[in-house]
Amino acid sequence: MSRELSVGYGAQTYGTAASGREITGYSIATRKFEEFSIEFEFFISKTTEAAFSTEISDVETNLRTPFQNLTVTQGSATLYSFSQSGNTGLDAKPEILKREDTGSGRHRKYRARISIGLPANTGAELYTGLREHGVEVAYDTSRIRTVTITGMFTAAGSNNARAQYEAQIGSLESSVLSALSIISANRELAEEPVADHSYNTKTLRFRRVWRELIFSQGGSTNDDSALKRQVLQITRLKEGPGDTPDARRLVTLSVNYSANVDKDVSTDLRGKYTSIRAWIITQVRNTLGGGTVALIEDEPQFNYDLNIITARLLIRGLERAGILEHKITIADDFQTGWVLVPAWTGDTDSKYEYKGPRQRRRTVTDVKTVTGFVYSYPGELSGDASIYANTQVDVIKAPDGMAIRHISSAPQFVHRQLGREGIAINVTDIVKTDVFDFFKPVVSKPVPT
Image 1 (spheres, rainbow, N blue to C red):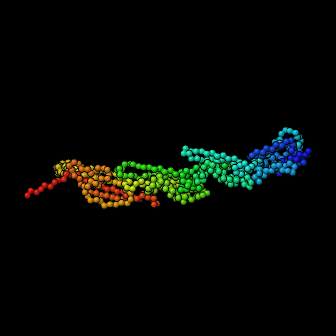
Image 2: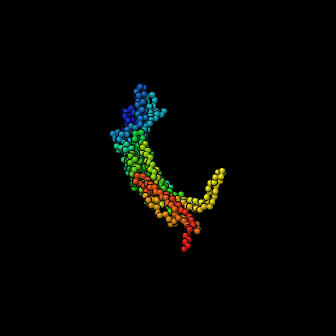
Image 3: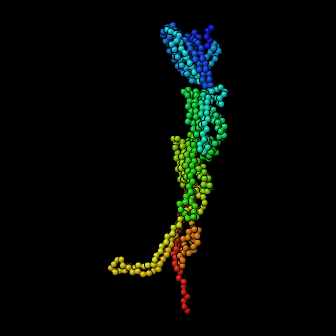
């Protein structure tokens, strides 16, 4: 019986004796999900040394050249057909082995093995072209999930592996993340660190990292397609450096913000930051618990090469209108009443002394900052103790047996606006200096008649 089996690889055919490359013995074909391979032995023979040498070179060159088409036929019937350009066989890899065996002179026996990748198109795959995939779900200490999806796509149909990957990866990831109950509005593609294709783009290995979102990005709910890896930190500082009890200081809120901007969505970093800043101010107000805020410092940084926005903001917030800062200083001046008058005696240190009136004087300096632009005329100069009644500081109590009189009052008002670009708080600095004298009043005696 003549042998009907033949193997075609590249431009050469191995089969019958008539071809000059006769297959002998058994052939072994292995077919699995990702690969097909065939092994066979064949003889070559030529009548002259030159022809035999040329045949050896041709056969060995052909069976070391990868990426060619492979066909296996039985007579006129095709058993297997794998096309590199048609993506039915992927990146064929042949090898040829000569052993010391039957054959001599211008007659040689070879063993050949050809392996060729297969597209993932059996119908058992989740998606055509998806040869393998894995899902890793990692929880951080806040139980926020990071989902890493890995796998490999093959070429399929008219698509090379990258085209098939780009066509199917969205559907694959949607099914994975939906199964984890992470809806599209609450996730972002944080990284795509691996998308490596093979020499001829017949296979592509990928790794993509998704991050679960629990907070708005730049005002979106929650995913902003332009922003990646956003970090918003707001620090709230309440100070009490030392005021009279009726003051409540402005709250200091410092903000640190950073985000990568997807260059496929936007490269206008300045424009994007304008919208982000408005949202940041809203978050600061929410952190304050409502109320008026003043933007004291606004320091954005634009990394145009890497398309990254970072920003530092300093904001002051008003919890309650009224007195923001308050400090009262009390200075007493007690003059004993001794009067010293220089005397010309030839000694420059000599003086006459006599007893004059004593004087007790108290100067009260009241420094405070209040909300709004205010100005008031000083009240009538009087000894009315009510002018400091609300300070909870007893500054004008007279010693026993003495009276007190309000001698002078010198108020100053400085209007200031804290903040910029309409995000501001109006305040007034008030410095008031009051002078009081303590004395013993003289009661007038009636004139004798």
